[in-house]
Image (cartoon, rainbow, N blue to C red; front, side, top):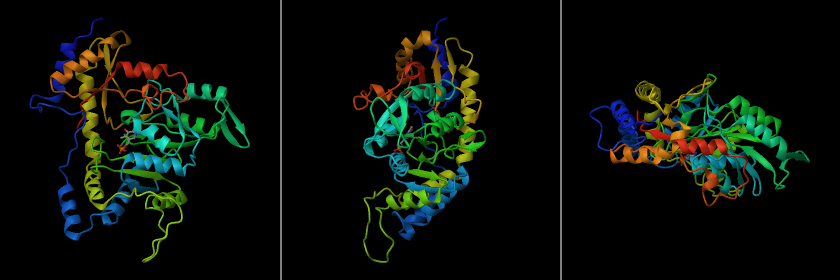
Length: 385
Ligand SMILES: *Cc1c(COP(=O)(O)O)cnc(C)c1O
């Protein structure tokens, strides 16, 4: 079967519609709700910085929407992940299991803790960590010493596992929770792409000890830049709030800090935008699911490719749609990308996997053949609401 590049291009153009912009981004923010009104409120009252009513309101809205008991708003998803990993007990010299197919921030946050990312493979149904393959691998490399799970080959403790809900599609969280329990490695969800996505009817970010969200400009909900930590554990929520505000002991005038903290709290202006955005989240999800359906209708039956669909156990926000080339056509991926870009369609390949980046190429890793396959064959398509 041949791959019809002209047909694919025409199909994507059909979905984007005749009046499209000359350049179509992968994901552009939509700021047509109360963003302006709330920002003006911040400026007129002078509450622009890291305390203010919008931060509290944003956190409450996040908790309500996701069903998590606590949400702590921070400056970005990376700082949320850094904080969550520290609270999960990740220490210098530990290993943390992360998918090799992820955005670099997941690996960087592990490194910020002084820990080492241990790269694991994904599976095709959700593009998340392959729980079954991981379990077989862990049986062969892990041992328990004095109650601590240790990598036999490196001698280092394996402290945590970070499932990533790739392009908004929930990973198989029940299967991953079983792996986490069996081997006593704490689960922290990287839900930075999955606000609005549900696993077995429950919002993502409720299955690990902690989870993180991102509100970067290209995510489904943006605060300009921002992130949040989710947890159902009150003690962890308090500690998250504390270490992200420089670990300052509450006092009317005294500056006393009893540990090294971080200046990670979200400013009120960002939270103001976030409140307005969350009011529209249901509409965004609806619109993105409709876009996914359109891609499916127009391109789904073309030879040589498929449009990626949510896994059976999930209801996805379809943050980024993806076209998947059949394995025999992956050599033409870059040619197709070039065609898209020449036509102003800023489609992108998946991230270069972590094991091929210079900083992480020597990280411990299992067989990563499925991630390699995914990376070769996948192209993200414009998905703005
Ligand atoms: C966006 C993203 C992050 C980081 O979020 P920032 O807000 O950009 O720091 C982390 N992991 C994944 C998988 C992401 O997509």
